[in-house]
Amino acid sequence: MKKVLAVLLSVLLAFSFAGCQSKPKTKEVKIGVAMYQFNDNFMTLYRQDIQKYFDELNAKDSSVHYTVEIVDGANDVNTQTEQVRTFISKGVDALIVNLVQTTSDALAKEIVNSGIPCVFINREIADFAYGDKTCYVGADARDSGTYQGQLIYNVPNHGDINGDGKVSYIMIMGDPENTDAQYRTEFSVKYLTDNGVTVEELFKQTGNWDQAQGQELVANALGSFGNQIEVVFCNNDGMALGAYEAIKAAGRTVGKDIYLVGVDALPEVCQMVKEGTITGTVLNDDVGQANTCCDTVLGLLAGKAPEKKVNYVPYVMITPENVDQYLK
Image (tube, rainbow, N blue to C red; front, side, top):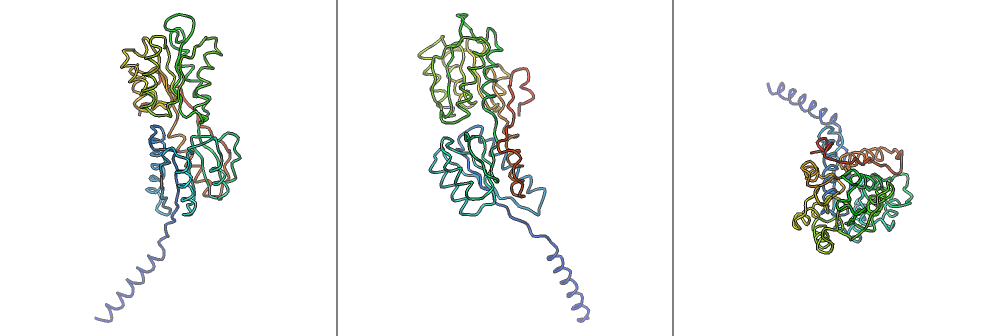
């Protein structure tokens, strides 16, 4: 009996050992994600999309496990530089970087020189030579500005509420050093002037993409210019939300005696477009950009050079007529 048990035990151990040997080892892939700051409505959605993408991959395929570490640059160049250098020293397999500063390419060059595959996102560096293992994923900000101008052009009398022959506007900018802010500021007004509309700039200030700053700046402008202001352009929806609060506090009504447009198509702003409390916004497709970014990262990890060094995901103009398609 003892001999039989011993044989059975040996057989079980052999099968157990064989099973352990045949089970494939999980490959660990580490991805460092450096965001310019967490306190940004759009980039909050973007980083959630990135995390979701890799979480879903982990759930589908047990042979590879993606560990994603996302850090907050707090809108500080030195902080982000140290974070990226830490990722490089840790030997991450890939990087996703949303640069704090695009007027200097020093950090981007450091990343390229590290040899680690990297996708830069959202903030494009003008005239930058991306390497074989690096590229950019974003959107052409000129289009977002153009769509903002078109939104105003399409309202009654092209936004000239008081009928004095000109559209008097204020402009709330993001970061003036950021290419997106520059293009949105320029091309929103350009669309109007290119289509024969006379414009008057009453006020232009930097709100740094921040809702509270947007509210404060628009409140100040309304206090200074009052009913002269017919249109409020905001470089993003966060500042547009702040602008709306200032407009409401001043006793003005969007769609009646003032117009307000933003960019990003945040869910709460899309709801306000539907209700008529914001004139319109422009979809900055966080899901489309995040998926394109992550797809590109996987290609780089597989040794594939990016097909394009600069990848643009199209913007979409959001109006009361089509907003239901984009409400999340």
